[in-house]
Image 1 (cartoon, rainbow, N blue to C red):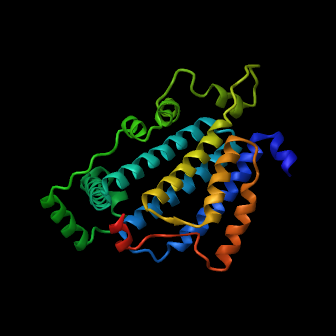
Image 2 (cartoon, rainbow, N blue to C red):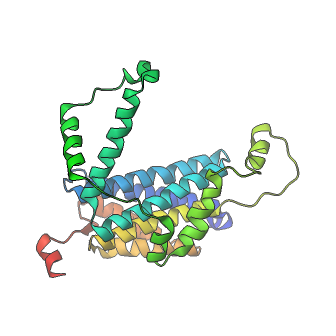
Image 3 (cartoon, rainbow, N blue to C red):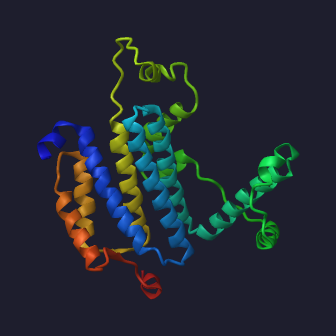
Length: 275
């Protein structure tokens, strides 16, 4: 297996993705009973990010390379959002802002008579939701979406904006040569043009997902088990080099999960106060 993986970077990334996807699934299951808003939002960010990476690898299989970059941009944006939420501790305001944005959108759609046949199929707005929207209007909730460039610079990772977010934006906003490679894929005709390899989008997606997890554990002041720490360190090394050492710690984490030994613990409120 190692020889085949090392000979083909894409196979290495596919293996790495499957391992990380399994680890994230186990982590999310441990948060099933979570009631703290901060942790619920973090859990949701992890879940959506996991689905984005799954989708990127699925799209890769059908040679939808441009779409891989589009979803990669979505992944980077979630990294930026979560860092903003932790740095400002604005989870509650963000949840209220999100509720208002979604409520107002569906209210606007329902009020547009042109689409009554479709909106009549929607579940009615509950009285609880109406009352909450009225209360939040009085509260004048304000939450500003982060500017990608500013967040990247504040993290000391300008490359995430310059060569990730900004570059991927060129796959969202139409360019004159959009679809050139797709034309060959759809028609099976070949022009003889050599297209660049897109395999870096696989590596970079795994890297951003790794950053999302690593940054969050630091924001939470989590007490990380040595096994999880070794896994994260060796996983990063795998993305940078051809190291396969992370497999050892992956299997150890699985055994810990079976034995119901936590991979990390969160400090109590009193411990946080001391910090």
